[in-house]
Length: 110
Image (cartoon, rainbow, N blue to C red; front, side):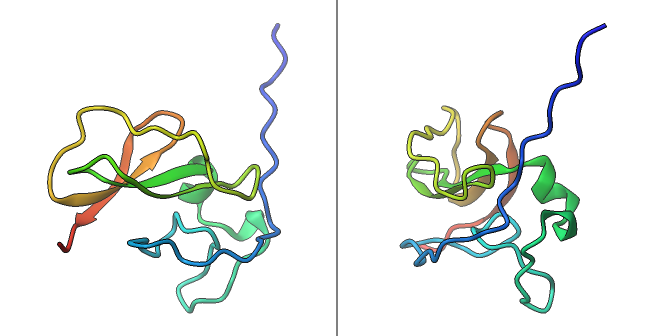
């Protein structure tokens, strides 16, 4: 019998982060908030989607440029994140930084 995989500790302490150029707020953003904009500092209160995808990146699909990234296990950006090849379209995509899967997309305003 193998040992269970440990669940990573998620950050509840958020250092101040200025918005990055082109960044878009959403459930994937650096500071989780409820529908009223109140900051949720306890990971137990976070939406399940956020806990299931603790490492995310916002990417311009047309250019492959990483707009922002966030790792909720380290409370910081993911400095070495590289988006998967094959992204296209005039859209911003939220990616799971570990699997490269598209979690959400939105039209890009150019």
